[in-house]
Length: 629
Image 1 (cartoon, rainbow, N blue to C red):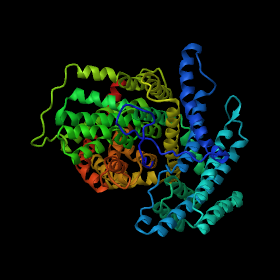
Image 2 (image 1 turned 120 degrees about the horizontal axis):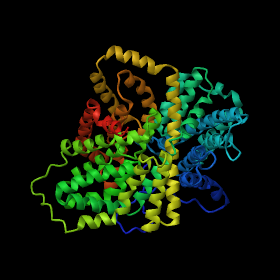
Image 3 (image 1 turned 180 degrees about the vertical axis):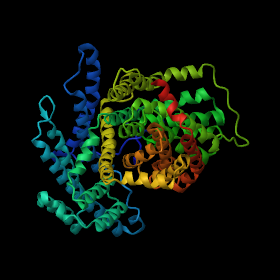
Image 4 (image 1 turned 135 degrees about the vertical axis):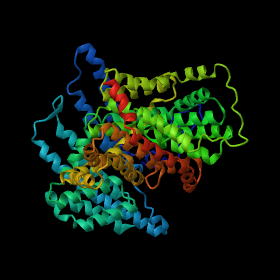
């Protein structure tokens, strides 16, 4: 997602920490503005129900022996409603992920306006085609006797796909400034023309080579990533004479996956922690526990950043929430500024392997391995990556003249732990309910989100009702944009799987690289540039289904591969163009992107070494899950 332009606290928290919040300017009052914001109301309502329904189910099971009618299926389809409504809100506030019009920024204002108009024009036309393809899919489901719950037909919820894509298409077209009248007119005309073609709109698609070139240009000019992936999927299915309804079918399948509702719920829990005083309380505890001075502050920073990222679901959020606290602490201890920026930026990328990390859950969903096993599998490798970062990255090096560690006041650790007692219990709620068999993964995520809201809003009284509503909306925007990308990426993956590309890759790679250890080394070398070029969620959806048959052919455990894959993806947070940590840190610490990029170079080398160790020592990933079975 795009970086928040101005991190602002949602409530008057007694902390200097910049609290990340999506920029959600309120539109002008009026009937049209209120109508336009219905998507926000719908997104917030859907996400709130996704929290409440599993909690009711969890409470009713021991009392009544059963929960509500098709409660889990209802929650899954609420995820589809939240996705489309959240994506609509994200589009209005400019939070749909794109590469940005970097080429156009080298030119003058007229070139930039042309690039922006062309990107919006192309995205509007693509979304119109996606709306039509979704309409085909929904029409095929209308006559099906499937019901969601309480007599509600499933296709009622599926209808949010053509409605959502159609509204995004219209809003992209209307977003163009009026002074570019000819672009504006075409942006409106092309989606309408696509609709007028009805169910024969496949004939309007261009030849494959020309279409791929046009899509690549749109990506460079700043069209949303989901639209670019959707266009590629439409072109590939069309080129093979397959129904274009297969694209929205893939989006529907991944959105209503039984385990996927855990993603927005854990994201909500992380945002609650980031927007309250939890970050400050945890920072005080970690610094008190590891002592002052350089090394104590460094170790506390690394562990706190990685753990906070696991809960917030985004390393950029960690930088915004903790950077304003931790960098001054490091500087006060005599730590060099550039090295301190590198430490906070790189350590914030290491939480991917720690439960309840969203990428960890997503891999478990796609690879069809138990989420609890992935939670256990990532623990030792995560600690290894922190140790490797500190040792090989040079962050523990103490410069001459640095002040000695001051003595901690007696009882400071106990007092800090008592102040942060509610935050320390949050992982126990998440992992204890899941590992103890008391809750399903989705119920555990809902319980964690409810716990975070309860402790920060009612116990600490740091979040008011309006702030809770904004948190729900921001979580819906983040996950809505991500799931649009995942749905389109899955459509591409399904096409490649149906085309037999993974099978051919297995045959070719095994003939060229018969040695398992050489294959693991080459896999690491492949994943590092892939991580730098692809957004992590799209990389998981596109690459995991393609690589999984290959690693299984070499006898590699899917759990081991998952940990290895995610460890390699951590470097993607630190390397442009997909390295969002670089951009977040640049904005947070007011340093140039070049300065931040240079500061994390030692960390990138350390992460590479750590990934190789995880690749060559499978027991690091498989030992704990094996003991718990």
